[in-house]
Amino acid sequence: ADDKYTDKYDKINLQEILENKRLLESCMDCVLGKGKCTPEGKEPKDHLQEALETGCEKCTEAQEKGAETSIDYLIKNELEIWKELTAHFDPDGKWRKKYEDRAKAKGIVIPE
Image 1 (cartoon, rainbow, N blue to C red):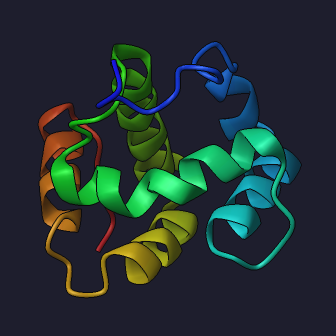
Image 2 (cartoon, rainbow, N blue to C red; image 1 turned 180 degrees about the vertical axis):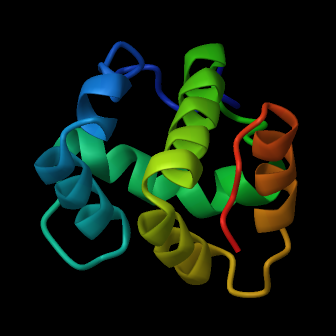
């Protein structure tokens, strides 16, 4: 399992973070380098770029599901945060389309 990211935080309740604007913004500030990070926030921040680029190949199953849940939630409910994240981690738009197409396939409408 050396080739996987740590599963130390796999049991975190992502839905609780996503649905709480204060927690979500705090996490995004951490990930985007605009604020302090909790230990739980630092872990994904350190691996987010690589996970995006590799399609999450070092992710545990829980992390893969969590990433998909988070991306879908942001696209559907927090589009501005999604745009800020993709501008930061994917300025050329290489991966953004893949994730947005997957969301669209699930019936998530993305306003232009």
